[in-house]
Image (tube, rainbow, N blue to C red; front, side, top):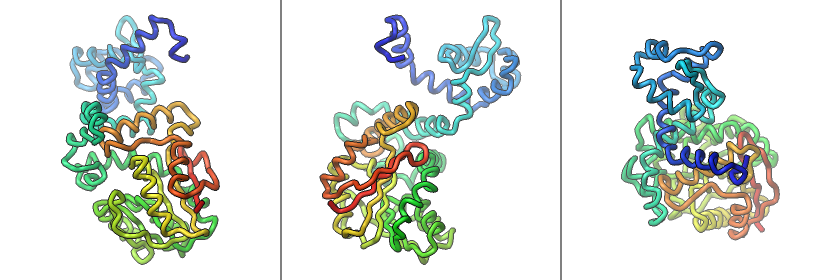
Length: 352
């Protein structure tokens, strides 16, 4: 039901859900992490009393009532008048759905405290909330310096959206049998490794910040692809080196890390090394080019992370928005591939 079809009473209730959203988030996370939601799933046929839950998890009745009463009002659990609790469909997904899990962990570990500074970030055009994680100009410069828990959480979030896309993307890229490929924003080296596994002859140059290259080089070495993967450290906001010439250029979940003007600058930098045979493959989770409402919502929310935590000036771009930037850089989209994996689009570009 669309919001403008709600009654005034229902709309007011929806407004209260937003007003107390941080409360509900933390309650849901605690119920999930303590295993209470999973326990309710196991007991879903009969339900379970609050006394049983208290004994099972060694939590006071008082504490459980605080958690479960708001959870029942948020449709996470179902509560009878005599305090028998059972799981709802929403509670099931909070406990068992991988998309929900990585999004919730990302929100808690990376974004929650920093989001308090959203208004400052909007006013200043800087990631003011990043100071809750560390003292870096952008998140990417601090990625290799995060705590192990924070880094694992961010990588789980990042890889969840990309991993399922790789088996579909690789045949698209290698349809033209490129002998050389640039992996721009290669991060941990995961895609460069996949390329080497997919094609036994391709040579890859991974381009990223020094901290990411340090992580990527270790991963590449562990997979014994040192002889086929080179590394080039470039700060794309201040590119001091040209891209090496290659048959294919790959940018996955990379351009959304930059402002519109920065994207045009990066694409122009790539354009300098391209000829009429070079293909540039841009894979992005375009927020308005999605099959499911959950994907649109998740991606629109992720833009707030970019503003507050990541860099202060980028977002999850819409399809037409990104195509306009490609064209401004002197390139043209010759083909669109969608859907790729969970929620990706690949734009295949060449010189205009």
